[in-house]
Image (cartoon, rainbow, N blue to C red; front, side, top):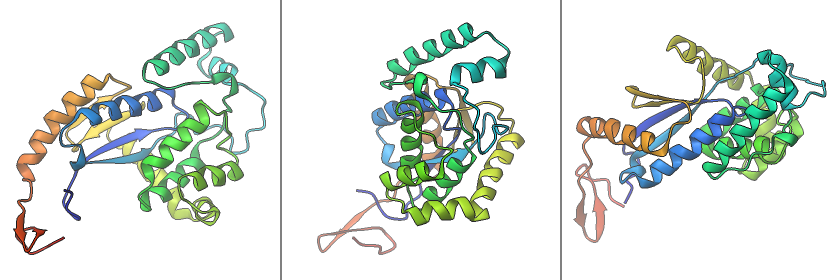
Length: 245
């Protein structure tokens, strides 16, 4: 039984939705979390990060992901294709299907704004998952506000919610704040997982690595946050302070 208001250990994740290893890292973390006995006491907090903030907001250049990476990294088109093929296999091992042939290069800033609003509504994880799937599997352009409205609707946001996230500066400020925090603590690549503000896992590590880090960090967190004991009063579960359900 989960008691409303009880503290949970936070796992903060800096991620960009156009980062292929971020989706893989998310899935590997979830695999580990499924094996973790105290997973109900873990809260994931998604943090914004941009791998390439210099992509224009209105990116009209017809450049596929292979050309984009080749130009950005200064490598050949053929090498870019081979690198992406390797990522496709890594994703497949994590249970994901990547279709880079259909991926649309776009600036992720507005999508992060939508995620920030979704977080406030308790839909942060759902937003990340939907946007990852849209980009890597479905080939949708998250740089298009209309596409964001469609994706938002899929997770329970209204078109008005999405429009608000794109026009209200507080959500842009939240994105910038996350990115600034990443710079302050030395994050220069994603995914970057921080467990209880003590331990970090950098990159799309194996489920075993995530599970070991969960166990170690949670063991220490639990010592400082002992589990609430329940008393049964008239058939109700109650905490010592009289909070009954």
